[in-house]
Image (tube, rainbow, N blue to C red; front, side, top):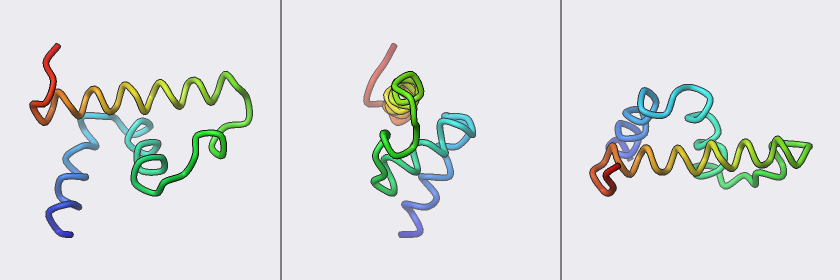
Length: 66
């Protein structure tokens, strides 16, 4: 558990504050995007943040290259 918290904290500078918070809510806590945004546009924006964040983490951890 301690290792997971340390790895999670390493993600904050990679993702930025807003994307990090959204990733915690969606990926970490299992919240649905539709519950975080009222409009379709906001849902799309959050989805883009999550998708881009996962791509950034994949690069950071060496699973993907650009």
